[in-house]
Length: 610
Image 1 (tube, rainbow, N blue to C red):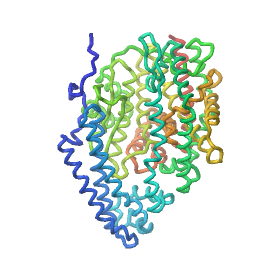
Image 2 (image 1 turned 180 degrees about the horizontal axis):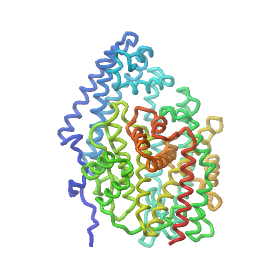
Image 3 (image 1 turned 90 degrees about the vertical axis):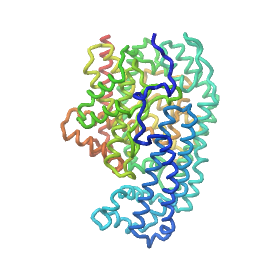
Image 4 (image 1 turned 180 degrees about the vertical axis):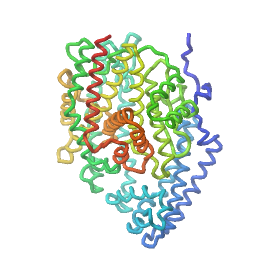
């Protein structure tokens, strides 16, 4: 019998751990770098007096200060990256907890003592600084590594306040996080949802176990889980509605203080994304709800129920196919699936997945789930908790590999202050890889159940990313617009607006409970406002680019690599347009909806064939 005991970190083979030596070879080396952050900070501070006289500031002094800022930030990022990775691998080790605290303290000190720099940089006469960074100018070459960074700061200048006003707002930062922190503490710590009786015995109902219990094939268990969780939310609905209202009011206040037309415009402005892109997404999805409604009729038929209920929608249409895939075999599959991207990409990723980028398996104290974490220096590391009998884990590895290769290309083709890509772009490279892996696996299986399983996973994942996140995005827009137009938020209108969306998106097959509209109170993403739409735009872009690369030739592949190498040197819409997809147009969203409709039809046929 196989030993299922979760090992201690010390018991994990070195070959199964990530190799962090490209960051630091030892704790002693890390401690040395930590101590170097203070003198790096002092190297910036020596320019503070010179920046107090922006009219007489020279290009040479400005450049020297930028170089000092860059050097300190590179050092800090490396120190913090190592600390974060060590803690993620084993959160039970007190040394790892202490290391993160020390790194955070160093970062806070650097940020607070150099907070004068950006406002001071923006106080330089614009004609001066533009002449310094002009590529054909006398100092253009020297300023080249900082040109994009400066141009992006100058774009924000119109909405940047005076140094005193900015300091006042910064002092409010911690208190303004109260709504988000309180929501998290209330829903994840304080609320008690009771237990659910299952054939394996009673199971505690929590925010985490809720999603697993809704996968249970026993409908009574799903119903009890659903009603019990939302019964608790009903008890505290006024408090949670008040927290969310506070978040919305805070967003609107900041937008008005900074001179934006709306909270949504402020959220989209740093990425240079027009509000029309947001509107295009919602409008296009609204026009293409038919395939989503079709899927729910398929689900109802598959479950054999007279009325489809909200607690039924997460039940797998096809049970997990029993397949044993070792980690090395998973890497082999990913390698084959990504061949359209060429030898450099595939070889680099393969060597990384097998040669120290990945912390592969679960150990005690290790963070759950998966992530990719790349920095300017070191490798783009990946954390997974790979299980050989879970096919989804192969997709997870491909997904995180996409993030890591995006980081790999970005850090090697851009200066530090403009190498990091935006969240708007982040999900493109990862879901692109998932799409290629899905196509490869579907093409290379002759098992009808495996085919149906792959299609069911792809449909539900696309649904969750494309349709579900758009519904959330529409709700955020509605709630903020209500307040901006003078209508206070109440528990009644919050529920009413959310129920309208549930009815529209789920369609006529779905029958809701009285408490179903309380779902809008339990979405944590609403406290990172106007964020979720990026999931839907990201998958739309990745599907379009995957089709373009697979059906195209060298030119199409080269265009995709222009996107991967852009990093933060371009705004996201610009880098995606160069890759071959115009996200300012509704066309990619239309294409994603058509793709989803095709998948639903294929799934229906595959289920019929079983």
